[in-house]
Structure formats: C-alpha cells, structure tokens
Amino acid sequence: MHAIHVENLTRLYRNGRGITGVNLQVEQGEVFGFLGPNGAGKTTLIRTMLGFMHQQSGNIHLLGLNALTQSRAIRARVGYLPSDPALYDLLTGQQNLDFALAVRGIKSRARVKELADRLEIDLKRRLKTLSRGNKQKVAIIATLAHDPDLIILDEPTSGLDPLVQEIFSSLIREEQARGKTVFMSSHVLSEVESLCDRVGVIRDGKIVTVDHVENLKKQRVKYVTVEFREKAPDLSSVPGVKDLACEGRKVRFTFHGAIDPLLGALAQGSVVDLNLSDPPLEEIFRAFYEGGGGGR
Amino acid sequence: MTLFRQFFVAHLKGLFIWMAVGALMAIALTRSTATFIEGGVFEAMPASMLALYGDFTGMNVVDIYLTISVGKGTVLIPTLYAVIVALSIITREVDRRTVEFLLALPVQRAQVLLSRLAVLAVNVTLVNAVIWAVLRFDISAQGYEGSWAHLDVLFVNLWLLCMALAAVTLAASMWIDDYSVGVKLFLGLVTLTFFLEYVFRGAQVSRAVRLITPYSYADLAMVMRSGTIDALNLIVLIVAILGGLGVSFWAFNRKQFSA
Image (cartoon, rainbow over all chains, first blue to last red):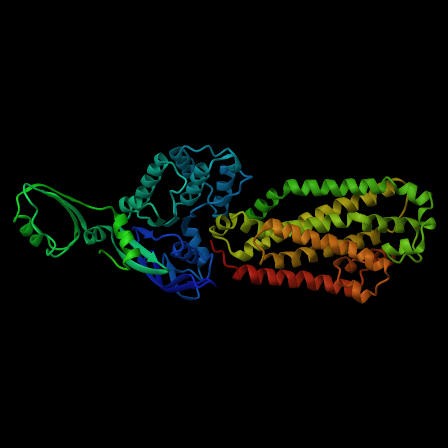
C-alpha cells in the first residue's frame, strides 16, 4: 500500500490553471520532495489531497483511504503544515494546540511539551504577540503533536531562521526513522536534497519527473575546468561537451555523458589542473523548467 | 462539544458587550416608563406618528409602551448581533485563513457548521433574554402590569427574526470570503431595512410591499395585542431559517478552499 496514491488527478481553476492528469505514488516511510515554482500546482495538489478542494476527475488515496469519501479518517492520521499557517491569534499557542488535540481526542500533552522544548517556544503567549517564525513553530507542533502517519508540509521552512530550520530538519529525519511518511513541497532545494529520498517536479500543473534524488544527480551535467601546460586541444567535437569557453590555456565547459572520450581528448594535451564539480540540484530543477525535461 | 466550546469562547467577549448594550438600552427605556405612561405622551402623540410603530387599537398604555420600547431600537441590537455572528461562522475563518487549521482536523464540515449554529442560537437567545428580562422585570418592579405572556411571544417572534436573518446571511456568506466586506454589506442592509420599515409604515405602504423588509415579519403591535404570531410571518421566518440553513450546508460542503 502506498502512503500517497494519486491517479490521473485533475483540478482546474476557472482561469485554466491548476493540475492536469497528475499521477504520483509515495511509498510508506519515504520522504518525498515536491518541487515547482509558484503557480505550478503544488499547493493545489496538497489542498485536493486534504479535501480542501474537490477533484474534477481522478482518484486520491492517502494511507489506503479514499480522499473523497474517507477524508475525515485521513485527516485523523495526517499532519498538515501550510506554507503560511494561520492559527487563532487571540488564543495562546497552548490554547490553539489544546483545541486541535481535543478535536483529535488526544489528552496527553507530553509530545507538545517535548516539541515546544525542542523548538524553544513559549506556548503561554497569545499568537498575535508572536513573530512569524514563532507562529510557524506553533504550527509545526500542531502538525506533529498527534503523531501522524503521514506528514504533509507545504513550504515548511519559510519564515524560520536557519537554526530552527536545522531543528526542523532533524525532526523530519526522526519522523522518517519512526516509519512516518513525509510529503514536502519546497523551494529550498538544498533542504529537499538533504532530506528527501525521491523528488517530484511539477510544471504547469503536470508532473514532469519523479525520481530518486541520487538518479537526478546522476543525470545532471558536470562543470569542468581544465588548465593545460600549453595550448588547449580542440574539445568541441567531444560528445557531451557544451558551453565551451577557452581563456588561453584554461578551458571551461559543461559535460554530460560517458567520461572515456573526454579523457581521451584531454590526454592529447598536457593537463596541469583538472576540476570537475557537481552543480547543485537547482541546475536540474532549472533544466526541467527551461528545457521541458531532465538533464540537458 | 470541543468545536462548540471553541466558538463559544471566541465569542464570549462580544456576547457580553452585546448583552450589555442591549441591557443598557432596555434600562434607559424602562427608566422612562413613568414619564411616558403618566405623562400622557401617547395620548398627545399624533395618530400618524403612533402608526409608525403599529396598530395599537384597543391596547393598554403599558403594552403600547412595551411594544414601542422594543420596536424603537432594542430590536436592532439582537438582529445586528445575529448577522455578525453568522458572518463569523465561515467568512471570518476564510478571511483570516484559520479555516485551513480547522479543516485539517478530523471534523466533518457539517459538524463545524452545526456546532457554530448552536453557538449562534444560544448567543442570540441570551442577548434577547437580557433585553426581555430588563423590560419584563424593571417595568413590573415600577408597578406597571403589561401583558407579560404576550411579551414572551413577542420575543419568540424576535428570536425567529434574528435566526432567519442569520440563516440568510450565513447562506450568502458562503460566497463572500472578505469578512469586512461582509460585515459592511449585511449590517448596512439590515439597518437600511430597519429604517425602511418605518418609512413604509409612515407612507402607509401596503403590507405586500412591506414584506420586502425583514422587520415586517415581526409585527410587534399585533403580537402584543393578540399574543400570537401572524401565521404568514411565522411561515416565512421558518422557511427563511430552514432555507438559509439548507443552502449553507449545501454550499459549505461544496466550497473550495483554494490558496
């Protein structure tokens, strides 16, 4: 059973935007990253999964339950953190959490206390007196306090300072270690890269690719800088070499493909220095948006 | 019960304020009872002016004063309050985006609406009850005897009017996501129709035309005279309540909460 099983899902707005024919499976115990720029359809998919919006066609199953007919049972087992969470401003953090836990029928506040200590937040203060980052912390506690099986996070670290982001990341890793499934949309690619097992990329309401982070990294190009003792040989005809730029004895280019022909070509000259570097995941992400596919 | 308590507590401060305003207004009126009743104000009042408040044929002066006391403005307090609470049920949650927090919890939308309607009904009852109690007991304490049983029926009529206005407002609010726009629009409409009712009465407009104002469905003088609610008024108010609630549940269940 998949933790998330989305089948041919379509939800379009009146302006024609939304999501079209989305298929997605997330395994139990997996941390899944969902990437896409604003307006790509990330939040629409999340809101449809949670029943805030109804699909026009397709099926959604979360934790084996039908999102349309068993939405309440799903929400009992799901923790959701919106991108810009809004809780009741006139209540204290504790009162907000007490309300949420009371609705869920949970009496123990041990987990709340543990999370509040970890995130260093004073729950006795009214929400309206808290900064955006501190409100976000209360929302994180509300997301995790009932020990959900599936955690859905929409841009979770926006508004958090780097130190709290680190605590949040460790909380997510701990949840994964406890067998929980995490689905997170994000713009912070380094966060996705470090936390997620697999990544889905959405563009214009359609899933462009879903793959393991490691495979995506393999697809990507290398940045290559070579310095020769004398004049650089002609590398333009080597398969996989692109964006070639020569600066005297120094050559820069991007490379994708089998490495042997490149090494053979480099051996025609006398190499003084060779540097191969991995571009960040941003490059892959950008490639999907600019080129309409993976890699280059 | 948790949902009910949360919404009730959220409205507690407002409830006390509206109850206090209602009580103060009623006290101000009851303190003038002797002046109006002993001073022969109604007898001296031109018939056309008295007709603004209804048909008082055959009624005693205490009942006339009670009717005018309610109709002169206290009626506006519970009706305005009912509309404000109705708007806060969903529209305020959407406007402040707390609806996401609420609907992410394992609750059915109907549960949310039902619990909040229960709070609305309780609070509207309390605001009406305070005004009723002041009028009933303060005037009685001053030694005047009115048709108290008829006054009870009059407040049942007012309660139904409040709930009808709230139900219609709630139904319409399903298509309004801006709380301040909703408050301005509905408070404006309710206040406008309140004064329109007087204008229509003053201009001796036919009953058929007056039916466009919600306040025409609480014919206070008639209720105080007969001790019963006019059948047409009763039917219209009940239909408005049931219809408004039906549309509210239907629309809320279908409502899409996009970003």
